[in-house]
Image 1 (cartoon, rainbow, N blue to C red):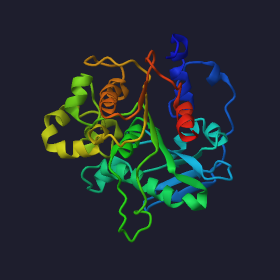
Image 2 (cartoon, rainbow, N blue to C red):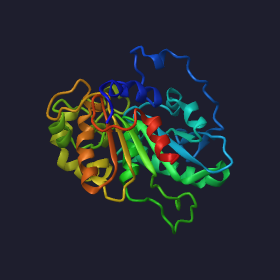
Image 3 (cartoon, one colour):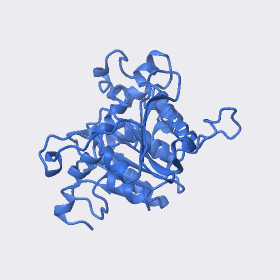
Length: 323
């Protein structure tokens, strides 16, 4: 178990290792930033849409390397693969972990295209990009068995969905990419949404506002309306329930899922309003409970959390991918 002093560093360590930006001065943030390596391959298309592109950084190695598969946040309505540059990218590469960062189609673009539900596009893109990366294992010197997904907020939700959902590989497909697996070796999710069920969100965190846009409850031409229709979302829950169950990571947990690292910047307080309900540690409590029930290893990190072994996403993924 970590000391109270070490636990207090969780926020600093995790933020500087992955995707969050914090204004609080620390010894880590005060240090000179590491050089940002240029991608080995930039803007690689994995589909026909302009947003279906990824960047790849190869870790130098004579043997196939494990992979960090990064999915940016932004509520599925904003953000970019360049968010990986906020992470300790050079540290992953130096450790021998290659890195992929993807763009994906937004829910707003899906909504304008008439896709129902809009969240189907960013989730399907994450799966397709993962299969594409596996198809490049030989060319890019990758260990396709050791791929870890990570991201923050919506990127974390997508990562968890991939971790828990049954394999989308189609062995009979004429498309070699579609024959590749979507299963993961492990996942590291920061401030992620674990369910899109408005009833659960309301029960866990009474002032919840997030989720309806995934099912078309927003003006797709104005991202500022994303969180404005939660009451309608809750009222129409039964209408959306089949989609809610399909796209909520919590609904897909089974005993054969990969190990999970959950990180939040606040302490859980179930049933209480939160300053940031969309990224509340309350979201991690019930997922942790379910993973414990089925025997999937889960490390749940937040300020003051008991039994935490790893200070941040980087240390967790190094421990898992390089063992």
